Image 1 (tube, rainbow, N blue to C red):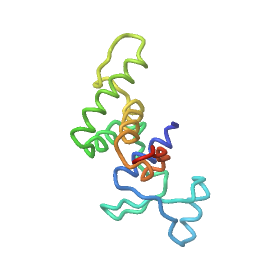
Image 2: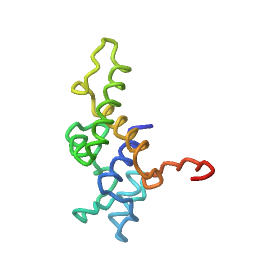
Image 3: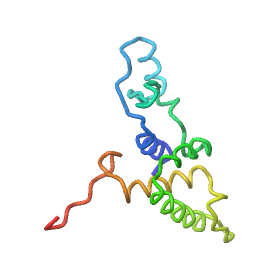
Image 4: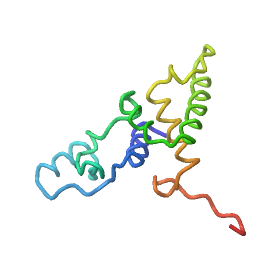
Length: 134
């Protein structure tokens, strides 16, 4: 996934929701400049923001830290293991520790965990086809 796609999935998990921009001339100008007509509503704070101000989880370790706090304990342990494997895969030297992971690596691992544990349609990810008898 591209960084902006990772950011959208993580933002959705962290309580943000895509909404239509408010009907005001300045908002249409911002939408035109950013190339994105949808804005984001933070369901906790009721803050509405253009996409350029959405947290950039794949580039910001502080934002990823806030996202990591939303995981359950089971999801967190799966996340740490997934992150360790991603770091091991990306490093030339064998340093398989989550402590050296970049924000992008953390975002990749985070979305992998969401893909494996959450209701996938909630994050815009295709649902698996049910097997007979389920």
